[in-house]
Length: 511
Image 1 (cartoon, rainbow, N blue to C red):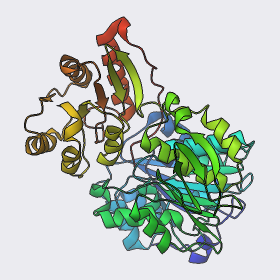
Image 2: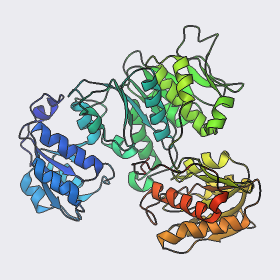
Image 3: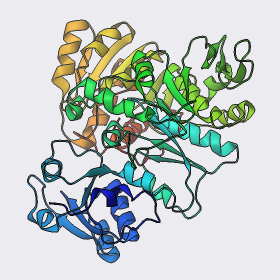
Image 4: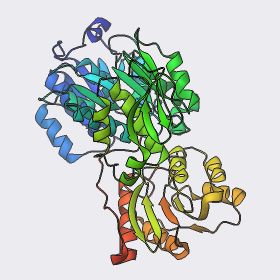
């Protein structure tokens, strides 16, 4: 099918290589697919975009830049794709490996890249920035934002990009250039990243924050999901940052092929050993990047300083330690880390206080889109009225319910996959007050859930939106779900509410 010599693709490892006339099919026209098409046409490639739905604004721009578009349900291989005879196919994240177009490419011998491989190959358009990679089931976005903030506080041009919402290709093509790209990588993106050869990434540092059941419907098994996540450490040059409390991340580092001299740096909420980051008597410490690490530690911040800033929850402290390890590996001084942390604020919809009224705290953690994230959120509070449910993505939430029965005062179940949760509560908490929101009207889900919570909430309770599930059954995304929760709480409380309003992120829900 393809007449592109392998040597030609192997040689395309620079923006300044000869990409002209290369026939490339691009699967998807979301934010990532558009960035891929825009990049390739700028490079002089011949581009055919395949999209299951038409985005008129992007379609008009594709026409201007000279790319061709085929809008098709993509339930089978479009005739236009076969006629185009691509020499390369670049798949947007999220298209399942057994998608008909990807299976066709495999059978036809057409190489498949992701946007991350393309971005690595053309990273030298302005100047070739160092890359710091972050993945994990939960905490990626916070850690990426923290790391980029800490790097910038030290005078470096740093860009948070990738799954955080800004395509890496857009950062690579920024005319100002960057010193460091802090790249959030989903398991979908890592699936397509090669670990050897001309397209393999060689990051300065990398971290997998944690691993828990998620996206099993996409990867097929926890083992396949873990294998994708583990790719983040391949070819790391300086620091492999892992979670001491998560043995799976340690094994990933042990199994990774890294560059000589790369160090394993652990982080955790316990006392750190030499080469670790941790917490001692309420002090966040670095025992990795100092000469006297066997006998001393550097203070980064204290829990007493972080708590009033909303940064004191255990899982947030873990994210801070991971980000600090990544940037300390890049030479950011400990005092700079300390001062920048005191100015940092969490993203919207991440354990965000919506209101405090009548002694009841209303918390939006809509970004807890899987059980692992919801568990971290639940552990941060004592007496909880839990709003839970949505799309469970093939994950069993039974263990999550069982583990937190003692802290729950009531549960309000929303979303399409309600019955699995209702059954779990019946098994593990049959006496718990349980309410089910059965409406499918997006505009009514949160007002009804909030009204039910308010009816049972008492002074000292926390009403916690931590759905443990994706949102797309009833909402546009997790941000839409969180925003509607804010609106419902404020509408109910009126002038009684104290809290901060949400700011909208521009990301998806992929872990």
